[in-house]
Length: 58
Image (cartoon, rainbow, N blue to C red; front, side, top):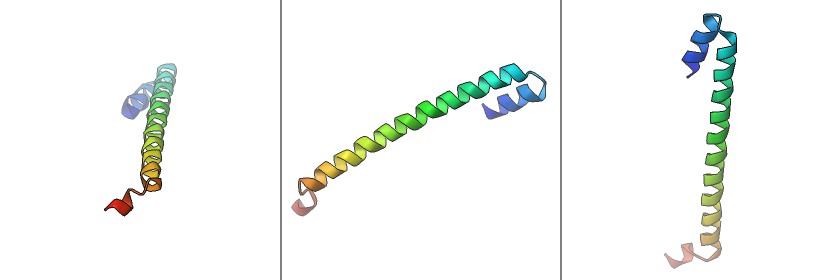
């Protein structure tokens, strides 16, 4: 996608390049928020296991 943005702006199609840039920014934001949510869930589950004494059972 970044190559498409470069090629559009290089050819003078600034508005299409800007629109594609905003789509890329929105997609990255959604991806990063999703990864953050998954990480928080995994961290919370690990804390719950540690508080329950999961390691002491081994």
